[in-house]
Amino acid sequence: MNKNEIIERTAEHVKKKLSGEHTGHDWWHSYRVWKMAKHIAENENADSFIVELAALLHDIADWKLHDRDESTGPKMAKEWLEELGVDKDSIEKICDIIINVSFKGEKHKSLIKDMEGEIVQDADRLDAIGAIGIARAFTFGGHLGNLLHDPNVKPTKDKTIEEYKKMDATTINHFYEKLLLLKDRMNTKTAKNIAQERHKFMEDFLDRFFKEWEGEK
Ligand code: ADP
Ligand code: NI
Image (cartoon, rainbow, N blue to C red; front, side, top):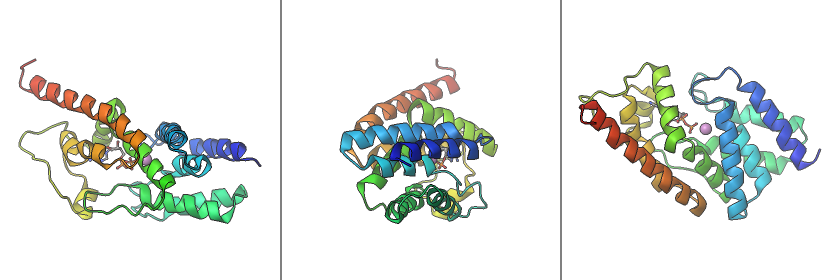
């Protein structure tokens, strides 16, 4: 099987696996991360095969949805890639990326080692900001049963992993606890540029949100 076929087969596999997932990790999230990661990889001269497969498979079994077990995703990815006959070295690289891309609170240091991992992480983080990021946040917040906003609940800075996993805040606070921090956490130059514009869009949104909240607009 050539590399293109492997990528296409994997896309179909992920699409099937994630159908019925409606909380922000649906197939279309993986699709967007895949396309963005490919775009960045081409700009940065990285190994597109590794990047595309890791991007496609990065959320195959999200830890929040699988009894918080962080090893399910890499295991499922490994089994799938072995089935397709992908070489051991590539599988190891891809699984390593999947283990390390997820952002779990400010204090959790990233263990990403190479540019391919950095690119998948950038693409995943870019999908959490901008217009799509706003839409995803309110979808996920709704799924958690959170309020849009409560002026009496302040954002919690420097959350521990345990606090972060509790996810008991309002959706507006999620912007201050995570989304507005992401632009400074991009690894590649290509992603930094894209993040800049998406960040500005969220700032404008929040500015307007608070004005509407107080009946000023
Ligand atoms: P990723 O797939 O990028 O690793 P997460 O699993 O952390 O992201 O979250 C999936 C989506 O849900 C993201 O867009 C994220 O911003 C959003 N999200 C996560 N936690 C919350 C929350 N407590 N309130 C609102 N949105 C959230
Ligand atoms: Ni993701």
